[in-house]
Image (tube, helix red, strand yellow):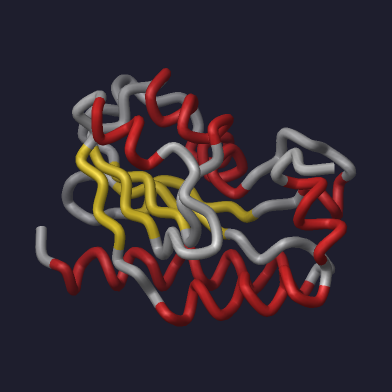
Length: 150
């Protein structure tokens, strides 16, 4: 799969992040694709909107994808490096590939996932970094609460 395919997949996650921001939430989006690039599920962080600390972008996309026979050949795409909770989801269900929009604002469990054999592609998207970075500057208390830094 080419970098342009991953960039196109990331656009779906970015659209989800923008939905979350428009709803008053944290702009983090995710999408799951099969090996051919077909969208399986998408979602965004709705912790603020729903008052649910477990409703991260990756978990929302995962829930929206429904039960799968196997996750090994699926690609998890997220606008931000996944936190430990979402990294655990990637590991627990055996996703073979993780595409990260950016890891500047938060590194998460990327290196841990790599050490376990997950193919991690960090696209280092300026758009993703800016979208979340601006949110963090405007809402530091919400962001710190979201990542457990209260």
